Picture (cartoon, rainbow, N blue to C red):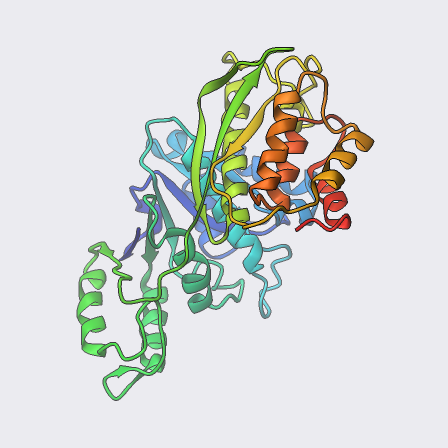
Length: 383
């Protein structure tokens, strides 16, 4: 769901306040500077600077986010979320990396799906996110990033316009209008919409009321769903036992997107358990969740693997004999993983794509990265 309101983002009552940040450790202007001064303690700001120092631009711009608690500064049970959507803030031309911004918002959605804390599933963002000093195009951000992610989503996204950004919205509206109707699709309204209707809707927004956007007349984005459940299998055992609370259903702009979100959300759940010092189900692939501080447990004793319900392709992704030969050649499956090995061939026969097959192999193998496995499958004709 998407809402719009004219108001102060810093006073938002949503559970998460998200804003775009750069990869250089600087919050020197715009919304970021306001958030730094009003909501973040020096310690929290230093966490952001440290992350920028310790990670490469490629890592930061690949869906990275950073959450800061603000209770110490504001007394509110709320979080500020840094969305890494640009590298160097030049202030000249387009600094926003649209793909990075999209990925960061996806990561935030995945986190909100996985988190068990009693927080509202709601996000506040500034109007013209990534489109101020960073030079982005708000129409593109709204229709190509925010609408696909939140248009029909149970997570609530509230866009806060300040005086300047609300003025920009009115200016953009005037350029899209002609002879009393829209001359082109604009801001989630289809071409031909009566301008008077839009003006009436935004009167309430201007008065500080949250307006829920109705996109029923706008072309519907095709939804693709993925479901992952995590199971354990004891060594030489035939019985699979589902790990409680580790099943995730997600939706994305395509099946691979949905699957990645589900996989990432499960990893976040497991990582949260570890960081909180809570008991974690034994699993042999925890090292792949965070390679920096987790180690391989007992080879083949308890294998984590996903069961994918949604299958897209109508025929096998790879020749069965080729797939079997590759598994044997590269020793992708550890001992005790016969059930998963068989599951892989069922998925392949039913048309699971290379991303799914790679994920299953990766979760059941040792010393292989997901990219290495996928590249090998692709080189052998997989799709």
